[in-house]
Amino acid sequence: GCTTPAERGQFHHLTPWSHGGETNVANLVTLCSYHNGVNEDDPNAPPRRGRLTRKGGTIVWQPPHSSR
Ligand SMILES: [Zn+2]
Image (cartoon, rainbow, N blue to C red; front, side, top):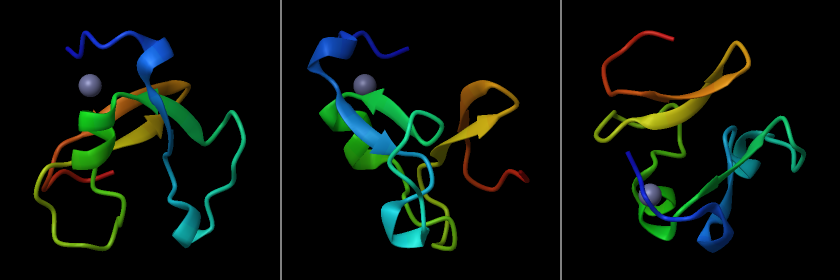
């Protein structure tokens, strides 16, 4: 539902760099600064806002308290 144009986005690592995520097209997605900021980067942290993940070939939002 975000309306920020992609050219104003930031690159986000789906698997965080600190967790071994690589900087390549399979692991990167553009997010606006707000949604990049609220994404829960640490998959082991207690869930609060959810996080983006890749399911099949699609980037999806994984809500808190959902199984993978
Ligand atoms: Zn956004």
